[in-house]
Amino acid sequence: MACVVQISLAAVLLLPMAPAMHSDCIFKKEQAMCLEKIQRANELMDFNDSSPGCPGMWDNITCWKPAHVGEMVLVSCPELFRIFNPDRDMGVVSRNCTEDGWSEPFPHYFDACGFDEYESETGDQDYYVSVKALYTVGYSTSLVTLTTAMVILCRFRKLHCTRNFIHMNLFVSFMLRAISVFIKDWILYAEQDSNHCFISTVECKAIMIFFHYCVVSNYFWLFIEGLYLFTLLVETFFPERRYFYWYTIIGWGTPTVCVTVWATLRLYFDDIGCWDMNDSTALWWVIKGPVVGSIMVNFVLFIGIIVILVQKLQSPDMGGNESSIYLRLARSTLLLIPLFGIHYTVFAFSPENVSKRERLVFELGLGSFQGFVVAVLYCFLNGEVQAEIKRKWRSWKVNRYFAVDFKHRHPSLASSGVNGGTQLSILSKSSSQIRMSGLPADNLAT
Image (spheres, rainbow, N blue to C red):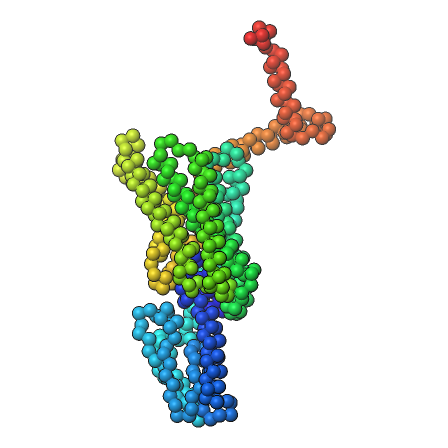
């Protein structure tokens, strides 16, 4: 259970946690290789079940070749343990072949390799289940909030501008990312076993392609947000509509190219499993490289925007004391962090085996709520959005008041099937005709 959840969490992250996150699949492959080695060794040694000695075996951690009675077999700690304990020197484990069979390993795996199977399973299971529950709640909350924000921005025409169009594309990328995570977990990791290690169907590969495309698109639209704001501050004359065309190509087109190239290379050079493991570092950089590049450029743009804001806030035209200037600067900075995805820079350039648990909580647990934070800050708390909603609300209340009032004053018209909107139009037309009839003839002539 813990290993399956562990792989599920790793697949959610764009920057994978290396083979440590795929420990169950690695053990499965090691087991298959071990059984093949044992079979070949039995053929060479003419060894069978009736032969004296100890048959080869897989003890769920490492492989033990067949041995004769009295023979001691030495096995090095599997390389996988170096991922869990990169700073620890790996030792050697031995077993003696006795007349009663294999002896217990000496020294124990925990002492030689720094691995305790029971403690690792129980501790990791609770941790990874908690993280999975956290990011499930986060993506669900973000999806509902972003959908509501999209309806608001699409519904009110006065909110249609280049800035909000970019926000809407960013919202869509967050929504697609959340949906792709749920689809992947549902299709690939619904069963609490490791069968997915050997799944190699077109459907599961298509799911992984779609998942990577959604994640890469999300990173690039975060980059577009930073690029747009920086260009807006730097350029005096800014043809927004023409730039928006190129923003759309970069935001949706570049991920298409990157993921297509990656899928093509995987198909011809690393067509193993369901493509949810990225053991080939060179191929993975086809996706990882542009994402890390967008994070790095966005961080530079973020620093540049902060410098520009400092200069503008310190301008004599802004007014205010020093404390208010720093308060406005701090508020502006905090608002830009989720919009630019600056929190991704914390682990973007660190080795993938460093602070694995902290990285999962930070990028998965907290990162899953990023869409919710962005929707709240740039839609629900936006002054223009609030003003437009209040205006529509007041207009609806006025229309409803006049409709009810007209219904009470003219019940014959109300019973004839004329609705409130038609009644209001009749009132407005009749009032305009009365005003026109009261105008002097010379005014009409003019």
